[in-house]
Length: 174
Length: 313
Image (tube, rainbow over all chains, first blue to last red; front, side, top):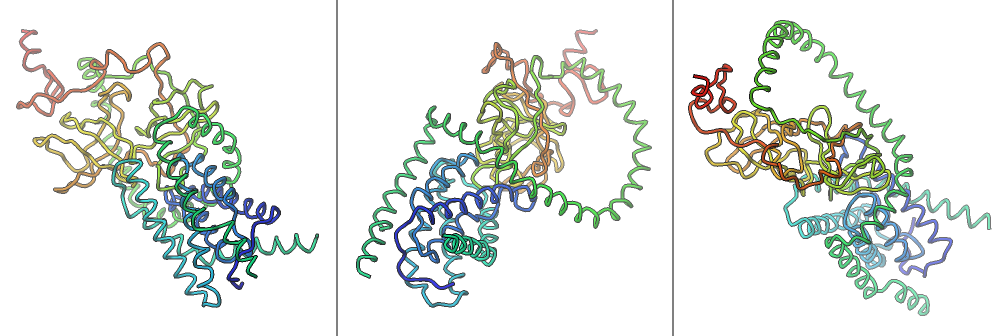
């Protein structure tokens, strides 16, 4: 899975597949909370998939996708509207900016970059919670949530490859 | 190549990203203003997607139960031995309990134990648990149609779960007591000193605003005080598990990670909060005298003391 330095502009078919993938991942993330281990601290699969799409995908993820899925997720989770979308926009921007730099580098370095992004998102979340709730939340649950997300990098790559296969299949059927 | 680069820049430039990010931040702050239209939209969308969330959660819920089962098998042997010992102990206590129950009935009648009178109870199933660290909340499958209102108290047989913060037609969002925004007026069951439990988005609660002279014991039960009139008095909230100089931590009596069914207690419409007769429904600290561990007017042995004893004479 090679990274090209320039992403082409969005096309409808490709964006629909991206939206469907993010939508499913969002609901899987919500459902993961049924595991006692992940109660209230489900890994941020949605943010992870946005980062992978930003650096690997041949097309940029459209803003409507990011905002739409983010808002639905916030509404389902009683989070302030715009909180997830904001994180997704930032991660997407970060991914696009890193895209050129990550071309032809080892997978472990991409994993490191991914970890850095997750740490940034963790701080963003913490700041949002403090500002919106005007109180200090416990830090350890946040650290656990984002650590698990970082560890799940290979799984997220697998899920993303499935999307690529689906797109390839659609192209052949055309 | 240059055109392609230009197109790429146009559709996903730094400036556009930042503008949209700012829009998201404004949206977040606007949400804090509790705008009715925004709340209705949120309720509508959440209601629309709830069946999908429930369907997706089915395999995960089953897997969660399976994992729980595997963990349980390992603990069963150990538990079995300790349970045998407990059975022996319980048989001895059974007789004592019968005596204490009779005593308790008499004491309740004497002390006008505050029971939430005139409240309606609705049973509901938990259909979605919050996955995010932002809010500790659950979604239940009963809403306005079942008579549930914003602010209603949610309990299980063990004790307090949280409060209803959002109501749709057929669902409601319940803010758990562990959430950062949940602050519950409580009393310490041993001494009736008032305090407030505050969630910190973790499994334990902080006990705050405890009077300096209060003596808190490890394992002491904390229950709702009824102050404010929103939550009825006498509902168990948790037990004190950690006392340090900096903070007192309380473990909720309800296992919030394994909620399946809850009871929603709501005031009838005509009795809508805030209630005038709150003072009758809530606890007050006991006087600091030699009988400090007894109910007002009655000592630990059920004998009348102070004014109550004088009146009798």
